[in-house]
Length: 330
Image 1 (cartoon, helix red, strand yellow):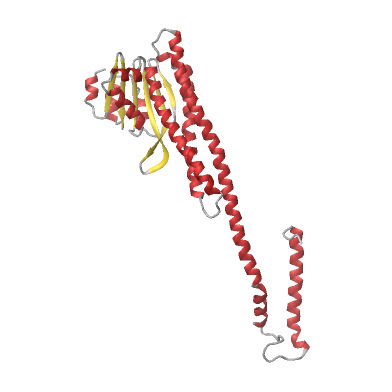
Image 2 (image 1 turned 180 degrees about the vertical axis):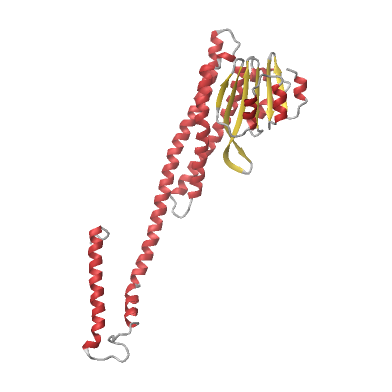
């Protein structure tokens, strides 16, 4: 590979340690990837995948390299919720190409740290094989994933006190946490599957170490990463159950608060019924005791008696029907 040519291409950097090359690309463009494709056996379809931002995690295997797409969470300064960020990797026998949109800060910092003149630091990060370098890249991103997930999970403690406070409405906070946990689970579940498959099928392939014990030790590094991913997923699953409980609790307490308000309004309305009924009677165009121009004839009061009788009958029928439905227990 012509390292000088790569260094002259803006947005594309490379580091070499012994016979191992690490090419790092931020904010990929067609021109950058076409330039890299002239130096490495990159398939055109893989270039299209690198330019896209919404691919599903996968592994494409070729004779001399593999192409991997992973997703990791990232947060922006103006947004606290984690978002998807795609990382594309080309892993060959003596090279590793990492491509992302520039928002994986931990990966960029790792590359810049490796780019320093400290030979020991470069050797510790890159090692001697692309498999070891791949572990270094994934390990730092999984650590970042762990920190982001723990921060989101830690917010559950802040929400718990507010959930049981009926003076505070925190439906928005609960919904936001549910979305964040769901987002992280959508990242971690495919990541775990890809990493397990990568460990079982591809780690040995890109390790040029002939000693079997050293080769198994490299696999143990990936097993350690897989263990971290499993712990993150377990914590997210527990948090998912917890936030669902908080959601149901918040809904029940909100419903109870609404029922109390409706009960108060119902009682207030019920207390106003006698006044309303009395005013209704005196608003009718019939003879009513106590009204103006009262006629003492009992026949003139017959409409009043009929209205009262019908009202009583209807009230009795409604009480009987409501008791039959179970709405009234008296």
